Image (cartoon, rainbow, N blue to C red; front, side, top):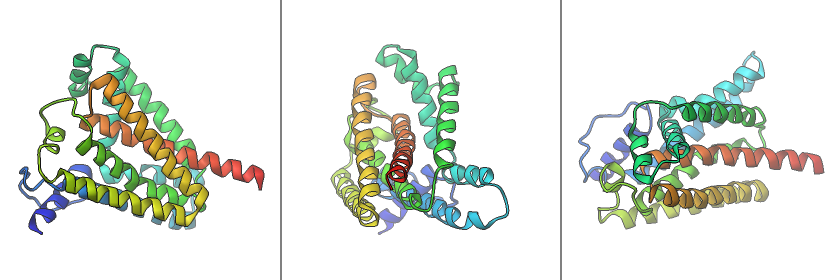
Amino acid sequence: MKKLYHSCVIAFSMFSKIPVPNCDWSEENMAYMMCFFPWVGVVVGGLTGLWGILGKYFPWNGCLYTVILMLIPFFVTGGIHLDGLLDTADALSSWMPRERRLEILKDVHTGAFAVLTGIVYFVLLYGAYSEVTPEILPFLCLSFPMTRCLSAMSIVSFPKARKDGTVAAFSKDASTRRVQAVLILYMALLAAVNLYLHPVYGAVNCGTAAAVFFWYYRKAMKYFGGTTGDIAGYFLSICELAMLLAQVFVQIWRGMLL
């Protein structure tokens, strides 16, 4: 139980800005960290749902409501996954050899392509969030733990682009199979909840997540030879946006038919 507690603390310490107690970041304590990564998504989804419901009662215009709704994930996580999105966008846009792309991922400087990617990402994100209604709000909330389940699964299952680093350490421990089993259980439960709430929106949520996950695997293997923490963050950011856009498009389509 102590190992699980430490793994939970480390997961929230690494992937969120939520204050947690200090503990030793040893390989033993980090063994089950990925089991608790989706829990950060549960917190993000819970706060998003709470604001999505209560924020409507505050006396301000829809623009500010949408901006706060959109930024809740970044307030909770500190933008750690956005950093991966921008770094990976720079690396992919360089069209350099694989080794050079991996070096760009570690570069602390922000390139022009990262800036452009960030602008386009937030414009699309704002547009999608501005279309969120009570009908699709639950599926937006569910997308946060879903994407983190898939991101965690990739970290413990995909080939590693680098043989060193934090991500590579997760495939060396005997606990990997147990972590994979827990993540599969999470994903099955989340899929069931999606389909229970609404068969159409639920299927779209699950289908979009699966499609982006497959695309992520192909892209990571083709351009980097595996995944890294930055590439996993790139996937998570793209997947969250894609899932929300898919929900919005289905909502519009259903509105035209009904």
